[in-house]
Image (cartoon, rainbow, N blue to C red):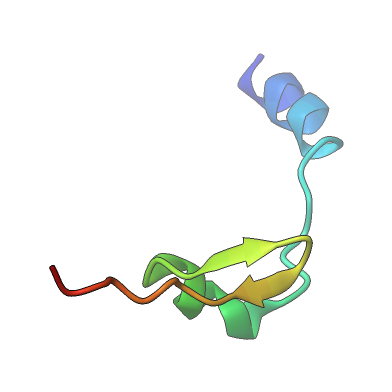
Length: 45
C-alpha cells in the first residue's frame, strides 16, 4: 500500500532544477518568478 501511495505522489513531484540555489532558499532568500529578489534595506529609526 505504501508503494502505491509513493508511486501516485511521485507523478506530482517536481524535480529540483536548480540545485545550486537550494542553499540560498535554506538561508531565507526570496525568489519571485524564478529570479532572486533583493531584500529591502531596513530604515534606521
